Length: 67
Image 1: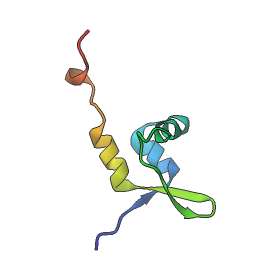
Image 2: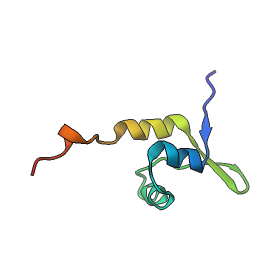
Image 3: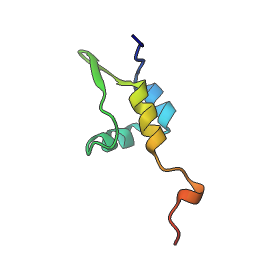
Image 4: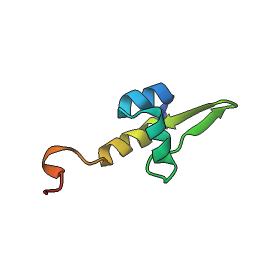
């Protein structure tokens, strides 16, 4: 069975380039994966879910809509 790696908030922010407030704002409407509770006052995100979110994000350049 493969081990699923957990990322704490600083690692998620570094990996995504988002600020904390933006990350939590995206979670409210379900646009970013929700964390798992790993302790009484600790949460973490599944790395594969964060990676999938990154893969699905639109890229710059030619994918931008024309004006």
